[in-house]
Length: 239
Image (cartoon, rainbow, N blue to C red):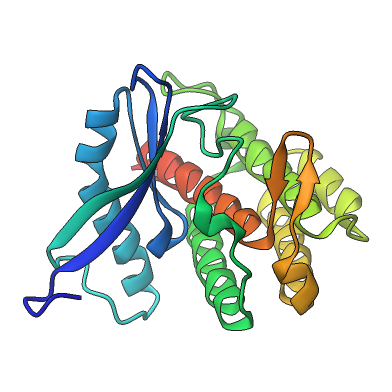
C-alpha cells in the first residue's frame, strides 16, 4: 500500500482475441470480478467492483477502506481456451497453482460464509411464489439458486472429490422454492466443513479435469467469484 493510502491491485483478464466479452479477476480480493462487453468496458468497471466487494467485507467487520484510491495494473490477459470471458479460462491464472495455506483457506471460507449469509437474508423476505415468477430481467430467482447450488457441487467435487451427503443435499435444494433457503444453508454447511478439513496435500495438489488443471486455490476462487456474481445479480433484481 502506498503512503497516500492507495492500494495496488494486479488484474487477471480473460477475453477472446478480439477483446470483446471480458471478465476481470482481482485475485488479491479473491471472488471480486468485473465484466463488460469489451475489455475496455470491463477494466473501466473494475474500480467500482473493488469498492463493492470491499463494502461486503467492511459490512461484516473486516478492517478495509472501500473509499481508498486504487492503482490497477494488468498482470495477465488470457485469450485462449473455451468459454473465454465466462469466469474460468482453461489455462487458469498463474496464482491458481500456488499451494493454499491453512490461513488463506480460513479467510476465503469466512468470506464465502458472508456472501452466503447476505444471499439468505435477501431470500428471507420473499414468499415461495416470488421465486418462481417470470421476470423481464431474466430467469426466475429459483432457477438462479439451482444454478448456484449446482455449480458449488461441481466446484467442490473438482477440488476434493466425492463428498458424502452432497447428492441428497442437492436434491433437497431441487425439491422446490418452499424451504429452499434452509436447503441451501445445509448444502453450504456440508461444503464448508469438507473444505475446512482439507489436508495440506489436498491444498497443494494439482488435479487434471479434462483440459483443465484444478487446484484448491482455483476451486475457492471459482466458488467465491460465482457466488459473488450471482449475489450481485439477485441484489439488482430485488432492489
